[in-house]
Image (cartoon, rainbow over all chains, first blue to last red; front, side, top):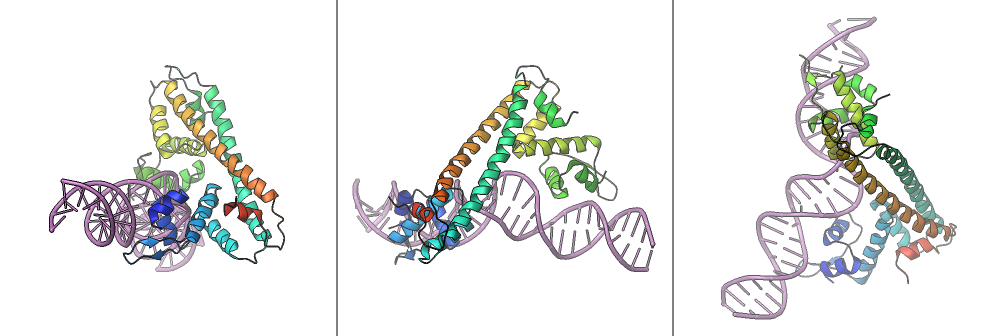
Length: 129
Length: 129
DNA sequence: CTTGACCTTCCCCTGACCGGAACCCTCATA
DNA sequence: TATGAGGGTTCCGGTCAGGGGAAGGTCAAG
């Protein structure tokens, strides 16, 4: 398979696939003409990576996950721990964003949104007491 | 005031303040020795920027907000619209993260987390049917 | 006079790619 | 046989919002 094939099958842009080779996540062979030549296992790995990235795992997380995936004697506890750590980072981000949303929502609610210059959003940002 | 003073008063790192000058968000004067010399209005602007950034506004949003802040004849509707757009981006991110959390939470719940290699998290990532 | 705490500019680094230039390969068609 | 379209390749630079650190100037205290 050429890169266009694996791209459409995995849903990852060709640029991303080249990048993943660059940083050593996959190692496709080369054809005589210099084109990358992907095996089925490469396609599997790319799909794996795509799903892990969609769940918000970092590239380094993915590297670890791939290593665990390929290690037949891994302990599921190792995978679970990584997932739990990631989960708590996600929770934290959600909480941060919710705090932003609440604050900003309050400000928006208090703003007339008309032609007058008086604006509680700016007033708050300016730090009025 | 030197940069150290405004840094501690505004809570922004000196690097950040220099960066904001670089991109034209603030324009502090210079003393004879070449040091940046900040007026009270600069400090106000920096505090304004810090709060806006803490609410997740991008630098370009901040540029617009500052312009509106300094425009005595602005319409509050302009500010409100920017805030609403930002709000909807935040909502979107929250929804994305919640979806991740839910999926990952399910996977974690199904994983024994022991010494055995069998792991539903990896199984799901590998795309088993 | 020296020490140490400031300040300056400068350049490279981050994460996870994306855009585009310049060039090569292959196949179908006129 | 030329040529044009549609693949592929590498390489360079940019993104966002700064952070790290080097090399060097400045200032107040001891």
